[in-house]
Image: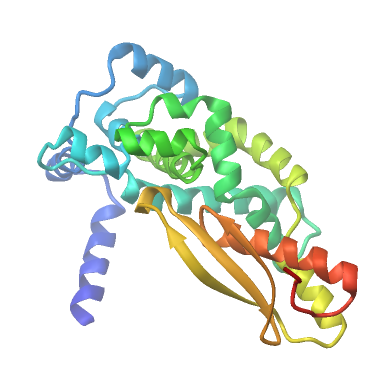
Length: 275
């Protein structure tokens, strides 16, 4: 543990300064060129993000789904998953900053809820579709089919990776401008249209009549990693009130809660659904 902390500290000292020649070489090793984006695509991508692209290889990696690594099969290539991790953090910070300054009378708990309404897989996928990002993403044939069937998680992940690419290639300020100018209005509209949290509504309903909090159980999952379908059942006091499916556990839980809430409102009590 002490060695890990020391390594983190040493890296922090290095990270706060300008990149040395060795660090620039390390940057190039992290983002090896794939030759996937031609000049026309680069120009289109520059228009999309609103900045001039310096490292084309960085953006190529940001747009490469892990399934495509099997297609190119080149040593040293990486998917966009690490960039997705960084982009998620940057998006969360900038959204928090935006809410902090634009909602001065709102307390911390409500700000947290507002951020979760704005920043989620669904809203990011809608942003990606609005910008036409899907035509830039590099996917295997099966993953492309999954995307066409509605697997919006692929789009959301690429959107986060793209944010990280803007940050690393340009600056934090450019990443902020991209998020505020290109994404925020879309995310706000999405949160206004789809702000129903059925899990919260079901929790409030059952607790109002003295029942215990609902429990959600994954009863089935099918499909490959990039195209899974989950089935979840929701229980109250050991009674199954309903089931739902979705492309991730959260979506399946929401669908199950919606079914259960509908049944609960009709009867006013917890009872097993009739078949």
